[in-house]
Length: 343
Image (cartoon, rainbow, N blue to C red; front, side):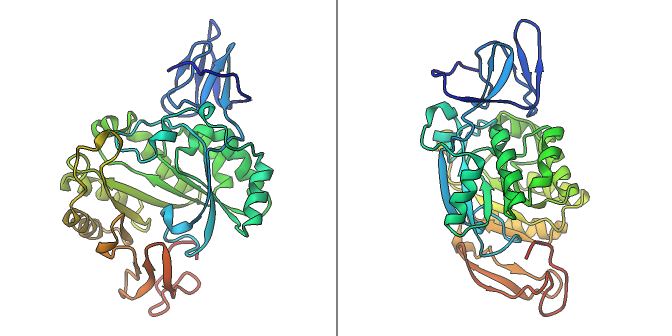
């Protein structure tokens, strides 16, 4: 936990506990960082100043873009829709394989690209004729106050909001955010805590809790599992994860297996073998998961949606493009089977 270099504008942080000697404990995520005066948290985005916790970089996104919603990935939520994507620097994980480490392992203090109020974010989206906002690229949880304010104003204006997250957040802040979320994709790294710690610096159980809370609160949920070569791609872990998902009521939740490519501190590893992704898909379907997708590898043709009952092709995808979508009012147009999602 290091000290920032500058004195940029800050925003009072939610979820804090004041401690003796001007220390403060952050209660936003399960790390529960205890910060002495002038120290910042693991996330690089929250600082103690004279016994008060502040969020750094409120209103200072480091990245803005218009994306297809399929890129998140979300396959059962408004297929073909464009979404206004935004990120701020920082993350409460330190994933060895991070693809965006330049911004995720930095502080908002390091980026001075934008200065946008929540209202200005929505105006920018409207100018692009987009009515969906995604908090993505890094970890939105660490800029919680900004996410909350943007999401609340977005809902007031009739926008849809999407959270792309590692799921490492405490129960109370998540519950307070859920009324302003329409959809989420949670990155479930694996099903074993020791591997979670090795890959991310965090623990498994809080992520499992997040999955249950999002589902219970009616937020449309999809799950991504990156199969990291030699670390999280073994058959036993895949089976255990799928078994847990089915036993906990996630059989209708789309599961995206994603192919790993060498990045950041795992550049010495090889890409996930394609045969392992195909095997993972078969295992998940055999376990009872109805909608299983393969990402990061167009050669596998694993991005189409089929009816789990009659096997009819419902949504045909080519990359991020929708070639056809014959889901009608949330039903298979051939046999009438209910297809969960927001169509």
